Image (cartoon, rainbow, N blue to C red; front, top):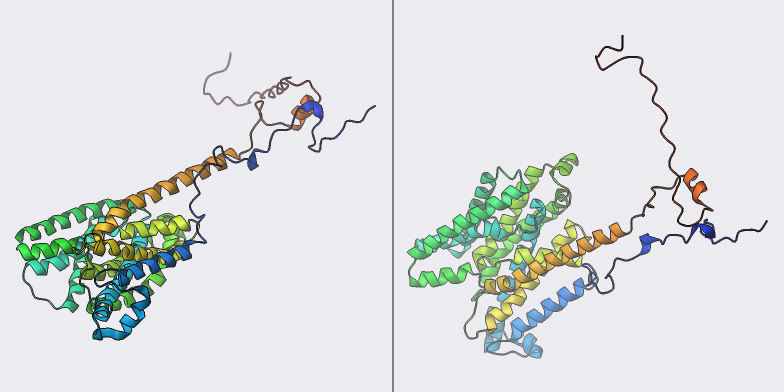
Length: 425
């Protein structure tokens, strides 16, 4: 009797080659696929710092007069004694600081809205918040109501609360995220129609001011505008810290959030209130800088797809600051000596970039599902192998079909007739 050589797989040579381990195979085309989101996670801090530094140097050096980078410190120390010192300290630095602060507020507000409503398209421009704030600032200007600069954030806050309140009331106090988003788009359209009516009523000078304001501009901003923004940031920062863990729970859905002790409706109202506090003062000073709250959260998710809402909130604020600071450089220099609104550049660059990021993330999810589905265990054509069928087929010639399964046992006759019909007489 000869011994059968072992193949190391627990199967005899007559049983044919063992099936390949499909769990370790990569999907077709994996070698030529684009890098998945999250591959540049380690480079995210370096990229943010590099882009913000480059934008800051360009914002402080370029223009008329041109200040070389090695003369920036001397220009700051000279102060009002030289023309370069006046331009850098009184015009360019306040504008750069305001761009960074405004971008951080808009980026954080965009992430709060998207996570609370569980919709990547939930942006301030589609919820009536930005339009309401712009209406609150434009109405006193057209109606010739003289207000001090310190009161303008309050009028913008009132308009933002009006827009957000109308959205929530029309959507049933935020019971459904999709209803809030659709209703917000309708409320935003109505508020923009009211802005158009005000523009018709305005004279030529006020019309130019309103038009530039509605596109979002950082032109001629000084330290007074920056000082009016910081008190609101001090109020919103602790609220963001408290809101971030709740956003992580809200991503699970209303039912799961309620099971974990979070009241979804109240949490959604609180998130909208925090977004209003972040957006209203920025809109009062700079106007509605468009689509920053849409692009910054998507950049944060693209670089760190596995992170939670807490880390996304930090990186959304950072990317928002980068987006506004970078967009303000061509807004000031592209058509010099004429300045273009920064909001036009953020919309021009932000919408295509955001759509591309969303498509990349969707493609990576589809590829991930395909690779996961390809790793499933394959069932033989004859069904799962039982010990009896394995014993019967092992050692049989290749191509022999598996034996037929035994017929089921006969069912014993029932002693009680449940059909309701009479039996044979």
